[in-house]
Amino acid sequence: MNKYVKRYLIDALGGMAQGLFASLLIGTIVKTLGQQLLRLGSNPIFTFLVDAGAFASDAHVVGAAMAVGIGFAMQVPALVLFTLAATGSAANVSGGAGGPLAVLFIAILSAEAGCLVSKKTKVDIIVTPLVTLLTGALLTVLTAKYIGKAASAFGNIIVWATTLRPFLMGMIISLLVGVLLTLPVSSAAICAALGLTGLAGGAAVAGCCAQMVGFAVLGFKENRWSGLLSQGLGTSMLQMPNIIKNPKIWIPACLTSLITGPVATCIFKMEMNGAAVSSGMGTCGLVGQIGVISGWFNPSQAAISHGASAVTPSGFDWLGLILVCFVLPGILTWLFGKFFRKLGWIKDGDLVLENN
Image (cartoon, rainbow, N blue to C red; front, side):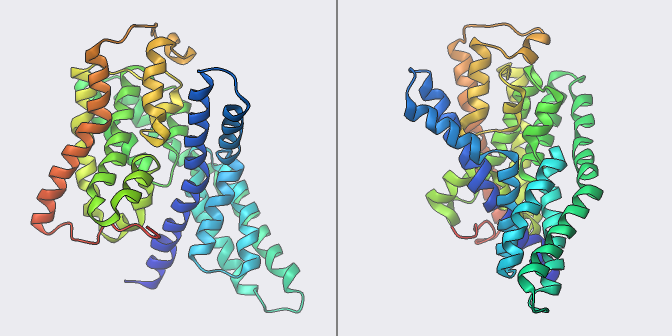
């Protein structure tokens, strides 16, 4: 394997995914847990959980964690690594929907710039962080917002898909939003910016679940329970380094999303009328499912503006939520994976997560 591909894509992406998990995703899980417990009544411990989760999932903190994860994976000198926290914070906030991608690009270049001067002068403690910081700041100013705009351009395709009939809309939105979830961009930010609710939001939730639950089940042989939880309740982005090595491992989850999307929109008429950001979260902290449930009883303003109103869910609605979000993604991806393993497209070890 080319050493640059390994360093800049596999190692760096792996480090970034772990940084994302240790900040945004674990923060989202803790925050969601606290919010749901507060429904039982006011309690300082529950409030603490919400505050702790909100801090960990703040865009500045997430950017810093991802950049430090990248630097750690690249094994950069300590002064470069510590300075990347500031670089990543700025890149993630400025990059908007493309924040993670901006962090990846800018952190790599900043790290390499810092490495070029590291330990080359007698005032290394000043020169190395200064070069790393200024490189990152300059690249953030010059490129971050454009990376964000490029990521948001996917939104135009999603908007177009919402005008189609439910079957095609379900397929396209489920596939696209699911793919965005796994890529180093923010599917949640894109869904929030588009105000994606209703049937389109339901299809988006289905696609995200197909990726997260799908990869969790597909890689269970290699990663066991820790992988099941980290991907099923965390993020399928953890598989990006493996996707770079063997893109074919992505096919089962994508095929599953093409099925579960129309099942959600045409059979169960599953709508996500909670906060639009939930459409792009899938099973991360069960935020997508909570969005669907809260949308039944208390629709968000964005959903109400599109004609949504409170409903009493039937047993069929609950069945649809469970099947679309958990059962079908697990079964279908496992079946597709079994088929592709027989073809030799997916081999043992292809889905092993780092530090699992």
